[in-house]
Image 1 (cartoon, rainbow, N blue to C red):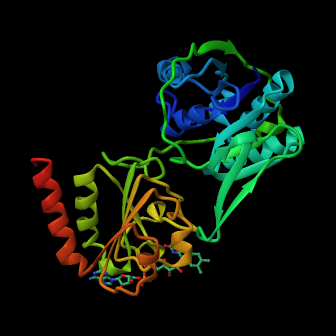
Image 2 (image 1 turned 180 degrees about the vertical axis):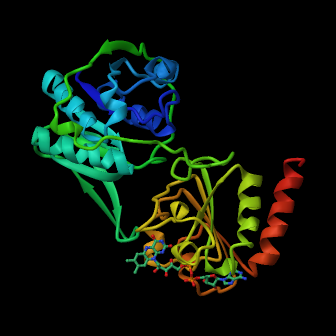
Image 3 (image 1 turned 120 degrees about the vertical axis):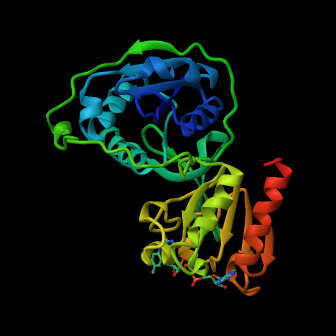
Length: 318
Ligand SMILES: Cc1cc2nc3c(=O)[nH]c(=O)nc-3n(C[C@H](O)[C@H](O)[C@H](O)COP(=O)(O)OP(=O)(O)OC[C@H]3O[C@@H](n4cnc5c(N)ncnc54)[C@H](O)[C@@H]3O)c2cc1C
């Protein structure tokens, strides 16, 4: 059976959830083999085995941590040339998409980004124009390279050997064009990372000011959720830009998305409309966001959200 290569997303010790999702998908199309670029593979091995990785190609040379994405694309290109895999799956993150694009050029292959699912015969599903259109497409040249959005599938464990295979290769000078001089870990607090979270609670212009975002944070914390925001809120300086959801922000696809005081402009929808369940709190019954809602409350958020938090806390005994 041909391999399906999965580029691991990790922070040097922890395997990100999206990698387990990619392994779950990869199993349907061949033998899942992880590509681990950089240090820390040993720390991630158990989790990779738990989600079915048959093999882990480890390239631990410093170049993979010290330079921006180009060495990873070179590494993948050498593994594609050596092993002719059935496909290469990467996470559709900012870094993953760039690695995928460079890999596509190097291998003369077709590339599909932002897939929200992969069906039979590696037909990828994309959701475009704010979710108004679903596109099914298939790579017809070279090795199919597919960048899949985090949370597209539920990760399912399946035992794998996670056999380590050394894949360190010479990194070209051309790939060392951009050196990482410093890494600053953003203060994320205890909340899950926005694009990986199972639940996201987002606030919009309806919040009224920055201080009122404390209410969104309280609701998020009662649900173990990440906090997001509309562009109206981030442009107003009420919440940091890195939490913006939408066309020019992050794309999220959680199990539950709670939109509070957000009207549902197409640019906001583009970043959240593939969420599995959408709950809306808005005082305007005509707000377009209700078109997407599985559950909606028409009401003043300053009355509804505190009651919601109370209800959640009572249920959880908190
Ligand atoms: C090129 C481009 C890219 C863009 N990219 C993005 C993007 O990535 N993400 C994004 O979000 N936007 C983006 N936008 C902006 C987008 O068009 C909207 O302007 C924005 O999403 C509106 O944010 P909002 O829903 O919070 O505000 P509004 O549209 O003003 O909606 C506020 C909502 O809050 C409700 N409300 C007010 N008070 C209360 C209350 N007390 N209780 C309950 N409900 C209340 C109102 O009824 C209203 O529906 C982009 C625009 C452009 C042109």
